[in-house]
Image 1: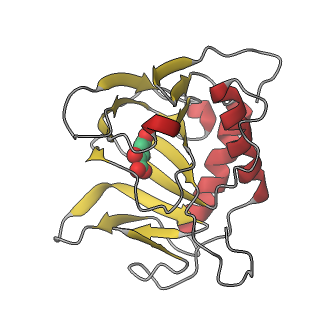
Image 2 (image 1 turned 60 degrees about the vertical axis):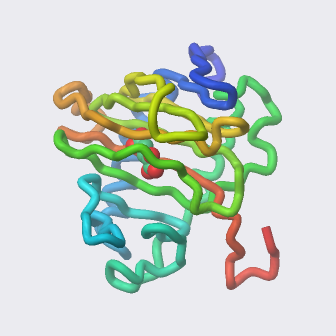
Length: 226
Ligand SMILES: O=C(O)CCC(=O)C(=O)O
């Protein structure tokens, strides 16, 4: 993306790269419009219920496959039973370009076909605790995009939820990719920084985060096993 303007790439850990300002304002606006659409249906955005009775403070809607703790399904059985929206080809393309730019390697996007995205909306109070993304059967990288308010993003290690970790700020338009040796690193969003977003993105307040992933699950309608 933005092939004419080289972006700084900050390697936070092997395989984990932060690319500040990766999305243009126009792309952010288009993503906000798309996410607003998905937030209304076919499965409405919701606070995910946890198995022990808790409720996540972040609100989430999924496309491609629906995630609920701790599995992916095509239908949102913990919401309204509807099949989630299709994962669009343009987003596959965006994910591929994200890998090329993050890893500064023209071949890095080859064969990368994300088939789910968790779209998270954080209000000023929302947070996400230390966790690993490990419900996917594929170890392909996770591509994460931020729009709206900045956050403190905690990126840890693959062994424990505790230190060592790095706290960094993810701002509107930033890309963060974690793959390879960092694919199963614990990570968290301890804090949103309210009022830091640009309303020109279409988001007046709060933070939108999109994480694209490869589930590694077979589409029951397809005869192709990934
Ligand atoms: O909001 C973020 O930057 C991270 C989201 C995340 O960790 C997740 O959806 O699993």
